[in-house]
Length: 119
Image (cartoon, rainbow, N blue to C red; front, top):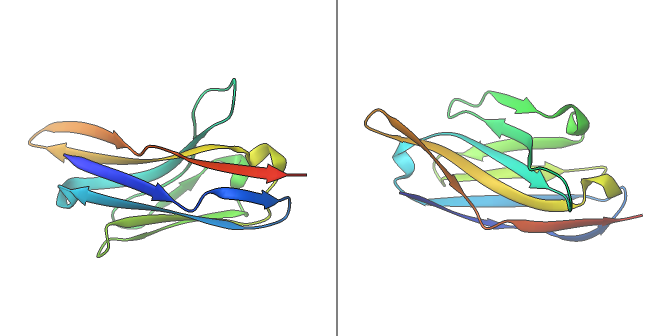
């Protein structure tokens, strides 16, 4: 099992920055990719960015050039640095870890952290 705890959300003005953290515990040796998703009211959850164990990254077009995902494998933590925030970035942000046991693949999710960007 893998457990995730997010932190770092809050209220910020447009143009500001926030840094989200997600700490993993449990069977962390089995984690492959980790990522950040977000869900705004009335919308589906969407991928923001993800990163493989080796450091390859992938970003949603809407955040490219503004957000940076990084990962510290020694601390079992993934970060999301969010710069030049826009009101449309307002959402609950969730961390996800993909991990394996034998030949089966599992996903674990954090509880979510609210990010609110005021105009």
